[in-house]
Length: 275
Image (cartoon, rainbow, N blue to C red; front, side, top):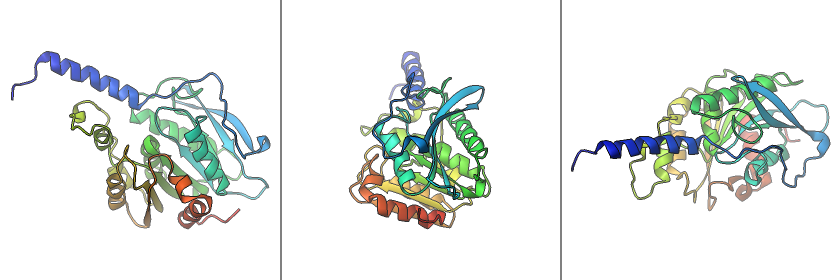
């Protein structure tokens, strides 16, 4: 085999920049147009907070009544923003399961300013979301859950690892590390280890989480194969549990489970009361 030429190496470098930019980019918008929702306007408010000098936008989804609830910090997947159907449906179902929810957009996603450049900025944004949540009445670390879907598994896991006393970590359709995630999108064996610079070592970080952990994954997920969920589970400390949802793909784990079963699973790991 011949040594790659400088031209090939240059092309790979440019491809690496492009792949990273794809992973860490989302749809920007000037205004959120939310899908149809079961959450009353009085229980939903748009909000802003800062991270790294940038303004991040999100929504606070509050349960009715004055009783304190467990709050979920929801870190969504790549490529979109919190108002798109799949990501909003995730946040809404968490609310339907009885939780207060802070759903937010990373830098450069949705209305949030700046740009998400790497894993560091995603994690900083998740930490800023938690810091904001803790300014709200009745919210404490012990009553807060970190929940990540897809790309959001990286900031969600890192947040839980760095926050002693957090209530629980929930990972849906998560990946074991950045290279495995990228490789799963290259079934022909293209050497993506040359094309993604961010390691995103979720298996290493999940081993540092002392809170209860729930891993959810679809058996038919072709974007992030179910083997990566098993890798995360193997690396995690007890107490932990894993649920593989038969027939579910990358984005429909919640709906395949159904609200009742989904809520029961979340309560089993968070010990949260039924609404």
